[in-house]
Length: 207
Image: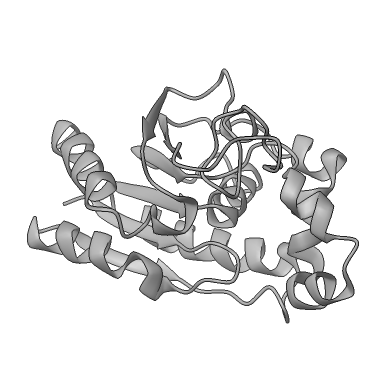
């Protein structure tokens, strides 16, 4: 049986994916979550802990990883720094997860409250060199992208498709297996029925 591990986004918790994980469990899929706190843990420490968790799951058999926003960044970094002998996931789902610098993170880095609350992980998302240093994933990767954000002259994304937190270009890369756009806002990607239905369908093809 395929196991699913979910990693939440910055400022969120595993509860953000409760509807998704509930739907997966209804399908007989074993699910688990990974929690972290950006205000008290560096990205390096979080990645170290996550890599250990992934290794433990990989030793049990087939598995799938789902990362929302920063969670997807942490997953890719953890996978890149693991031993080659560790079994790769059958598929990686990235839900609104940036693969390059986040323009909103760069903007908010000027404010002390954002820096205080997000610490090193906030710097990671806002630093081009660090984001570019995270390599492409070596497993089949499905990017689920929200496109329900607002456009216009007052939008930081102008005319570009976005989910109100990241733009289409910030979550796109040619190494991805596929990209699926859905009319969902960033924060609601893990709880969207459209997203859960999509993931269930994809997992069905793996079984």
